[in-house]
Each structure stands twice: as C-alpha cells, then as structure tokens.
Length: 192
Length: 146
Image (cartoon, rainbow over all chains, first blue to last red; front, side, top):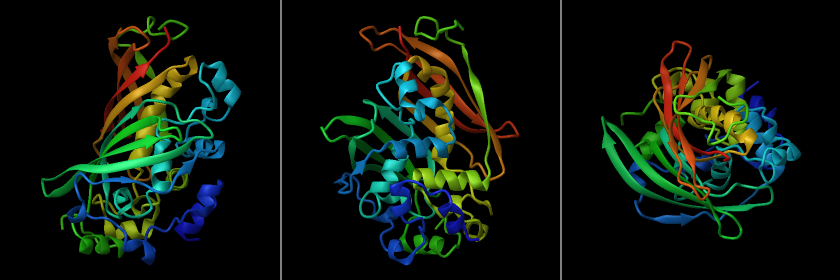
C-alpha cells in the first residue's frame, strides 16, 4: 500500500476527504513559493474560508494525539469553565493548510520548507460555527549560515471581524524554483 | 501545588506533569491528515530516502505536532480549571525522526498579577528525545482563574 492510501484510511471529516493529500502532484508544483519570490510587505486576504465544525476540532485533537475530553465533550468543557467545545491551541494549523492552497502566502506547503519555530497569540477562542478568514503577509527575509529564512504574520478573523489569533511564523525555504523542483523529484537541494 | 489550580495557588518553580509520546510513521500520517499538512518530508518514506531535507533518510515529525504536544503539557494542567493560553513562543531545535520517543514538560517561571482579569503565569516548556536531547524549547503565557 502506498503512503497516500495509508493516509486515506484516516480521512474522516468532510474537509479531509475533499482535500488533496498529494503535495507532489504536477498541478500543485507550479504554485509552490520559493524564497527568491517572496514579496515582503504584500498582504493577502485568503479567499477560501474555513467554517468550523465540531468534527474538524475533534479531528485535530485526535491527530496530536490528545485525548482530553475538553476537545471532544462540549458538556465537560462547559463544566471546566469554557463556553463550548475547546479547539486545541494548534488547531489553526488545520485552518491554515485548508485555506492556503496556492498563491501568495502558501509558502508553508512548499516541499523542502522547514519550520524552526513559531510565536502564536490567542485573543478569542475558536468556536464551532465560526467562519474563519486568514490574512497573511511576509515581513522579513534573510540569509543565515547558507539558509534562506522568511518570517510572516498570519492573522485569523471570524465572521464578525473579531481577531482570533496571530501567528508569527518562521520558515526556511528553498531559494529558487529549480530548488523546489529538485525537492519535488526527491533530490536534495537544501543548500542551493 | 494546591488541589484546585488557581492563579494564587501557583508558585514559581511548580513543575507540570510530563507527557510522553512515541512517534511512529502511523502517528505522523494521522497528524498529516489532522493538520492537512501532507508535506512529503513527513509522509513519504521513499521520497525522504533521497530528498533528505533534514539530512536524514527518514520522515520526521511535523514541527507543529511537536508544538502541539508541548501545548498539551499546558492544556492538561490549566484547561480543566478554565485556564487559557494567551501566547506561546517555541523554537524547534532538532528534527524528530519517525521512531523517536519524546517527553514534554514544563515549569512555572513567572507570575504576572496584573489584575482586571489580565493575570497570567509564564511557563517554560520543553521537548526532549529518548537520548535526553532538547528538540524544542519555549515559553508560554497562561491565564488561570483567580
């Protein structure tokens, strides 16, 4: 069984079933962003929205894995002082990958990208029924010890315009499209 | 620590219960499905043999999964009493190859009695692999009930 078939066994939610798990498919490769191309200061409001369902929040907790009933049982969460089912603090990862499929700001999908760390701030809990929108912009890029870094700000808003959280992400990216294509073919290109 | 966790019951130096988790390929696939991050560096063992993004011929755990498990140390501790994280800063130091077993922990290092519902504590969090090497470190700000 191939790796895509292995993962298909775990796809349960509507979003998981409709989302392409093949990050190496030809039609995606053209859209992958690389370091040279990153335009600092350009803000993008991502057109795809994320309507939060309980199954999405539960699926993220299952994949951590985290079996705390806070993430599965609304009544238990309320008894603990929360106002409903709790979204895992890193639930925004699922939101970001769902909406950032291509175009400016989709750098986190690029094959060969590495994650050296993040800063996340939470302002308002994500709740079932929220319709989330992401705004994103790169605000720094630099070269250090032969590696190509970028830093971006990602803001998540709900349907009322309430700021739910901010993430300051750092990535090490392939420098050129040729480097990305090497990675897509399974060739090492990190220092390119 | 007192029976019921509150901002007042917490002291600097309090150690949070640890979390231990083995990282298998199956678990990494499940996390890929959960996060929708299907990057082949995590999911595609054959690709990793040659691409070696981290200089390793095997898939590695998602950085955000390491972060999620570091957060679990805090959510297990603070969320059952209505606590909430307000900020976290994490540095991922080493990749975690499939087959590793990591331990995640933390300790309270600061109390910020700001009042008006703005009180928070700072918790230093860490992740170590089975050899005791740090793979991630971070600092979290956590609101606790009075």
